[in-house]
Image 1 (spheres, rainbow, N blue to C red):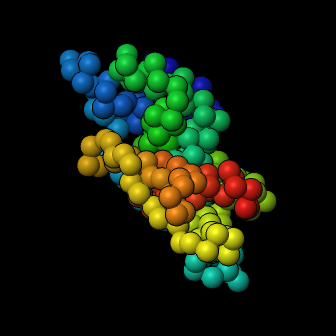
Image 2 (cartoon, rainbow, N blue to C red; image 1 turned 90 degrees about the horizontal axis):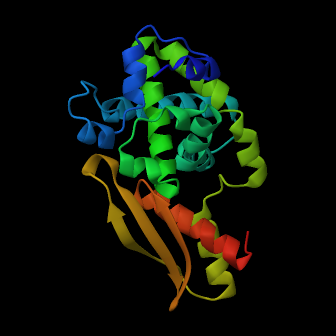
Length: 229
């Protein structure tokens, strides 16, 4: 597969094309093509996730000098979550280069969004290994930070759980209760589905790579459905 178009979109020319190919190789593809000689992207994803969080944390610390820790934490979560990462990956055309099993390649729903988000983290890890931290940092700042203005305008960085609890107590007089209704994926790549209820009524549902992320998504869903934003 020729990755030159992706490199052009990303603004990075790899020295080692194999490590970029690895970044796009999903475990399901390896399971279905055991003689391919390729490695899956999970180690690169692990590395890229750490690089991404450090770059965004450093950027917010220096950019928002008057912001409190809680505000920066919420904004960072909005910038590094699966939805944002998947959006950047899609913009870069990553979907055209994924190496997936036949089964995974048919799924274009939420599962594909998680694959794209994980792939972006793997690409960041690949850039860090192939080039250096500064190149990875420049890639992240170029393609992810511009989304911060949209996130600030939309208010999606706000702690949805705190806001929903405040609204629920104020309007209904009860505290929301979160319940994990589904867990899937291997230990290193868990996905959670969480519901939020007030009293006996389920108000929202959300997915995430951690229970905390899923709870935030459930609270956002509930706020939107109730018109409490």
